[in-house]
Length: 292
Image (cartoon, rainbow, N blue to C red):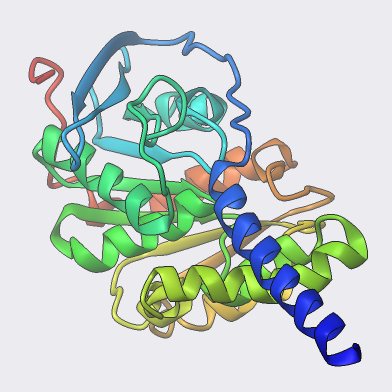
């Protein structure tokens, strides 16, 4: 009787955790609405890697452009989420490009999105632009930006990563374990294991901390002091994974996972980093007339 009960409980646990592994890929999307209110806005769609399409905004600043900044949003959001961040770069004279990842915003559906799929969407936008970019990502968009920079070093001039995690499986266990208290902690390890099996045990191979050592470009790591998903020590671990002297740090005082861009000193930190690394992007100019 006891063995039968334990077997039933074990089978139920496995079945329920497998179902949850599917559900976490389908977490309800939470798009926001925030239209760019500066420059010349071009609203278009471009081809995605799977044959679908990606919605894109390209915003040209008045009076010519210093280069292109491509901004990638986080899980469940959309291109609108990056508008306020993009405006900081727009006011510095940059063309800013924002897109919605597949299965987000108005882009085409894709059943199992992950950091690698987010990276593919970044690469689709870079291919459409046809020139190197300054790359900015938030949360899973930041992890995707690290992957994209590692795969396309000649097409990424500077890298901004906000609210990023260092290790993929550890981050997922932290994230899912923090949901639902005891229930979340009970199921998180198995949910992550199912995902690792589904992705053929390759999740940690694209961990930002693992890829960072080979990324030889200026990097600004932006992290909220009170990030409720990934603690500040995760950001420090990531910083120390890049080649010595390549990664700098901005801590959003009092900010949560998504609030660093609202923290005091954020615009100044962006401007300072840009100005100190002008030689890394200014030789390549964005041309206002080439809108693709």
